[in-house]
Length: 50
Image (cartoon, rainbow, N blue to C red; front, side, top):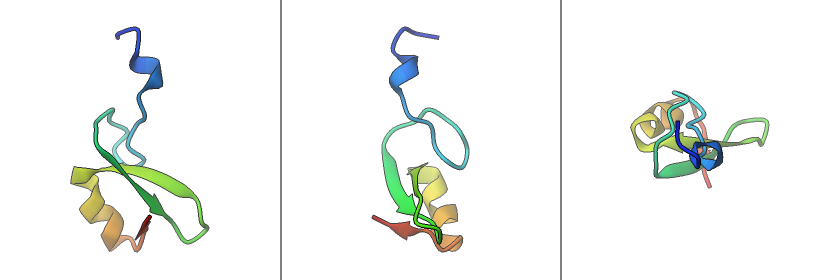
């Protein structure tokens, strides 16, 4: 664990600290940051890309 690991954002689906992250909204309007490998899953779950 490095000193700057506190500032990295996790993927909302797989919880990995990976970049780049894409912003999606769910049906309730909450913003979720999702990594590229999980973006296909997010689109199947009807999340909308911001």
